[in-house]
Length: 330
Image (tube, rainbow, N blue to C red; front, top):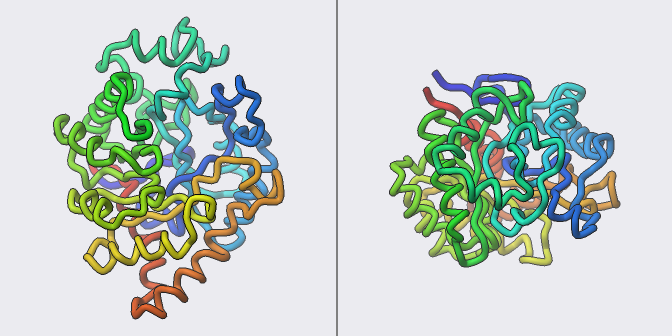
């Protein structure tokens, strides 16, 4: 049995359609709340909804919301956007990365997580198997006590390092995947530590073809990308429009290098749009419409000029590959 699990229920893979594979829609990360970093708080459901509507109006059908519990997700608001706009949204169970875990756990989560002050306290106190059970519950019963179930499980590691707590959450998420068959996703800080994550996942018996590695374009190294792709994993180029890190030509060339080597079926593309200044309806940014309306045509033109079939590749990256990557196979 194959299906994709969305906040509104399970759907057939062919129903997913044009998909952004890594976004954030409504979230108030406790770490950034405590630092008064307003730009990193997507805290207005109606403004977020307008950007999602722009995406839909250009032909977008589905979004994977990669917001884990430690990044202040608003499950109810995102579910309402999905309902009100009739768009598929995949929710995420699991964890992000260690520097966020010093933040205080918000009061609303105390009934879910227990009487711990910070996320670090909670993760450190719990065993790997207890954390595994928590992630499984969010996939099979619902996120944060709601009836809305996660459609993928996630872990993260920091820049050029994996802390003991990050390894603990990685192993917990790997075991939850083995139990539930939920697709796996990882946060790699600036695109680092993917190969080290792979070693740990393999030690847990994970089939890497169920895995997607985020932020690969933050480390625009074709050799590194090939080593990840050889495992059968998906590579997520999810920093589109972030010119402060690299021009689009760099991202496109990295993608096309993978295509040349035969890995076109393992590429995902998205924006990781997690700041008010990136959103159109919060602060005049490029918005969720940018990739589908502007980047895709540019990619197609660029790929065609280099002798590729740009339209065919775009269809793979946004329709075919997500439909495989985010599928539960039970």
